[in-house]
Length: 126
Image 1 (cartoon, rainbow, N blue to C red):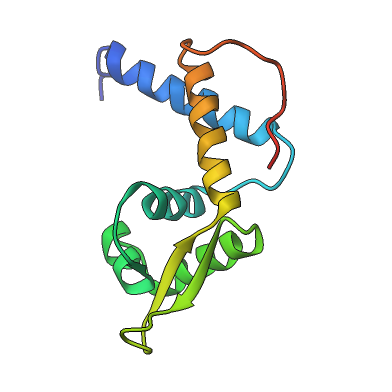
Image 2 (cartoon, rainbow, N blue to C red):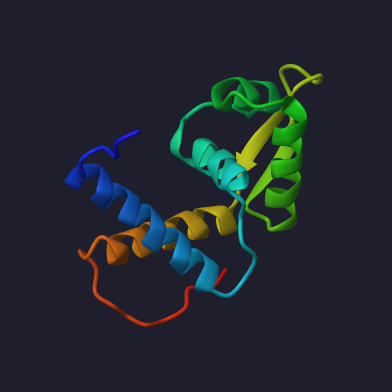
């Protein structure tokens, strides 16, 4: 099978993804898996009351996989679960102060990786 010709836009996007992941791996603190990062970003970038069932449907993964990701995000205080007061059978995912700070740091890392930010050489706190 012949290789497809280079696509500068998608190559640039993949490069930005690589630079972002490398910066996240190099920083102090715990690493998130791709699934954990996907759950985290969905909770922080999409409005609404997120539930395990809703996240599983949106990300097209099993509910146990979402539960494991949320367990890890909870350990890191990047998200927490709370019983839905309107439906006590349901659990809502809530954002945290530390999670908001992580998202802000992630945006800064991506800005630097895109070449639009100043190189600071500092390691962001986890």
